[in-house]
Length: 138
Image 1 (tube, rainbow, N blue to C red):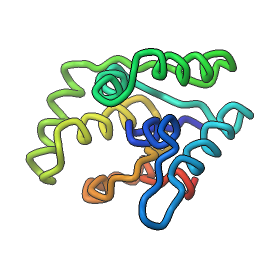
Image 2: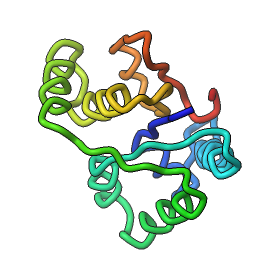
Image 3: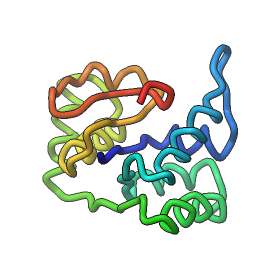
């Protein structure tokens, strides 16, 4: 199974974040551990890397990517002009942030079965080919 992790899942893991009720860092840790134990593979993109660089150091980013690469569990997808155009259409049609629409398109167009995120607005975009889930729901 292929899953695409939204940037917030990496931030939860690396920052051991929590919200008012949930240990988001622990959920992200368990999810990544499941990938390392060969339950599924993870897709990521330059968009994830760009967004991560706004919040954490390159060393932290390299740590998580190398950890997953060491077990051959993470695969980088390329952003195409077609992906960008479709993301723009979704942004305008569903009134979601462009970056989130692009994450959605990248997951969908690269065969991910699930997009893992904590952002609720992904549920506004519906396609039966991909499931939207939180880290603790997969």
